Length: 150
Image (cartoon, rainbow, N blue to C red; front, side, top):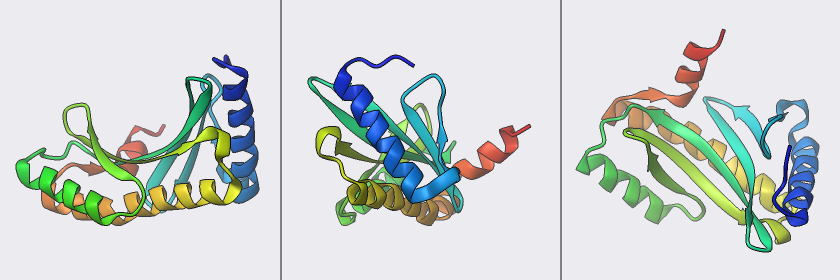
């Protein structure tokens, strides 16, 4: 795996240590990129480390629903929920996919902050996937992963 800067590698190593301390063998490290995967309930999160200037960003992201009907009503729903949430935000990707993401500054990240971010992302995705699927269609991310599994 290649890192853009020494800070990128240091943050990735620190995040990996914290994740293994917090979640043990449930954490999977990607071989080809600075990213970890972790599943809980019907949600799965990716924890990725990106270079940003002389620092890094740790992005905790979970897919919530794939293939939803992107309507004005859905967009208003997501924006209203974003205004209620203290940390993280919903977003749209591709043509019709919804994710939830929470980003942290890599140089100042600590174990407790990372744990809160991961649990917030997993919990929010798990709480909202059924609601969004019922109201706006699509498939929960967990169901898509299961269908694609060998």
